[in-house]
Length: 207
Image (cartoon, rainbow, N blue to C red; front, side):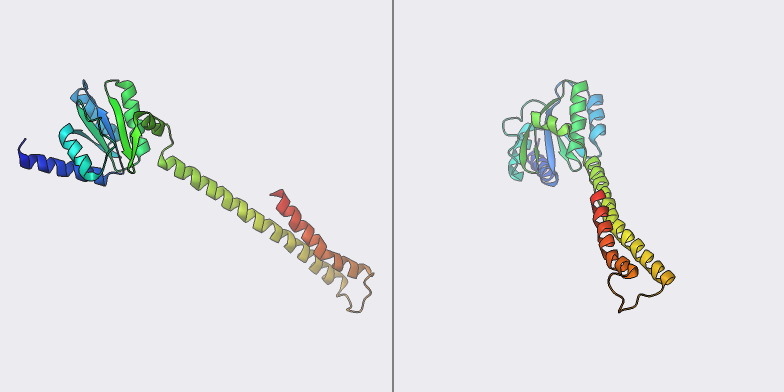
């Protein structure tokens, strides 16, 4: 490879490292072109699977500040440069490796942190970002519904008490301001706020 071609290849790999949120190094010795094409297709939505030259990749990684692959760039290598969901890519690579043992996952890097092959396997067992977001949205909706109930129930109970008092006044007439506290009408009205408070407290407990 001409020097200019090497420089261009290193620059391209360096950009891939810098533009990717994560990357996974694999060895593909013994895999056919058809199998590599299948692997590329399985993770295409979230990553670009690129066959690389070890020497050039080492220089590109150094230029990008990536040290996760030090000592692992041996044999026929290919890297999954991840721009999407790293969990989905880890799942895709792990599933493919189970069906095709010739694919060896050597290690990776995620947000600048080195990952071992075992950690990538654990990453593959996590739920996808979409699933987690869906669960979070469901939990938030449930919490909001609960909050609406907590606020609405006591208010509705209080409103019923007020309506009952208004109906009683309309039926029996207004209570005189000088009526003694022990008269039935005055006692009922004096007890009404306590009843309302009881209803509100009970509404909160039921939640």
